[in-house]
Structure formats: C-alpha cells, structure tokens
Image (cartoon, rainbow, N blue to C red; front, side):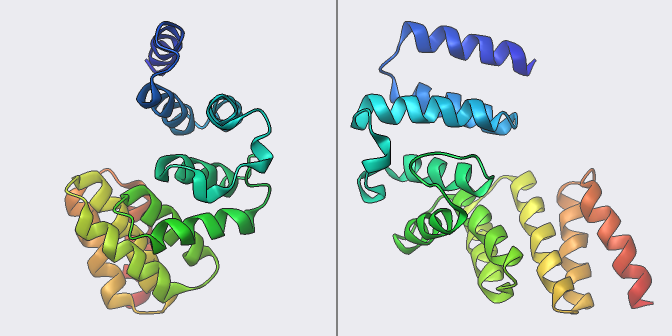
Length: 190
C-alpha cells in the first residue's frame, strides 16, 4: 500500500539522510499521494540543509532543475512556502524551466495546464505536443491526448477534440474523464 511505501521511505531517509535521490523520491511520493503540506515541509527541510536555514533567500537560479520543478509544482497547488510564495512565482519558475529546454514531461504537462487555465490555448497545446513527443509511457500519452482534446474542445474544434479523446481511450480505456468528455462532445457534434 501507499502507507507502507511511505514507511519504507522514512526508514531509508533515516538510514541514508544524505541521499539526494531518496529525498526527491520522498517529495515526489508525498505529492503523488496529495499530501502536499508534508511534501512542502520535507522539501523545505531538504533545501534548508543544502542551502542554509533561510530558504527565502535562496535564488531560484541556484536550484537544480528538479528542485525548481518541485518548488513550482508545490506553489501551483497552492502550498504556502518561503521559496515561491505566490502563483506568479510558480509560473515564472515553470517558464524558466521550459526556457532552458527541459525534457521533463511533468514540467511540460504542468506548465501546459497552467497555460490552459489562463486561456493561452496555443501555448498549452504546444507544451502538450512537446511532452507527447518525449514520452513513451502509454498512460502519460493518454493523459496528454485528453488534455489536447480539452484544448481543441475549448477552441470549438470538435473533430480534433474527438480524435484526441478517441486516441486517449485507445491508449487507456479506463480514462473516465476522457470517456465522459467524448460522450458529451459526440452528442454535440451530432
């Protein structure tokens, strides 16, 4: 279970407190489990150990790509933290990550979602398209196709929206949101 995974991670962190990969995995796992406040607390502790106790003074440019990604993500999900105290800072961090030609599919997808929520549909589409080219995971491809379908639907392009949603469902027949949107759009198209 997920709780057992967390127990294992905490045990490993106690045993190997300097292991950077383990620290990043712990933050990732907490985010995956939607335990954002715990993830933020652990992330802040790691940054304080690495950069000094006043993490509010840490320049985002001095962070590793992965550290910057976590800071941006945690800010985007509205977890208060000293490093990125507001949504606009999270957006700037994502812009910076993408500008440096990131090959991180999660960064591209998260930033694409931000652009979509701000109605910058072409930017969102381009970010999703880039993420699609970078991943080989079928479930990730399905999610990207779903999001691209949402962009097309927002642009009232039902033909392409249905095509993306259909491809999403071919990759992941269990994708409930895609199935629901497909049925709704199919009804509008007829």
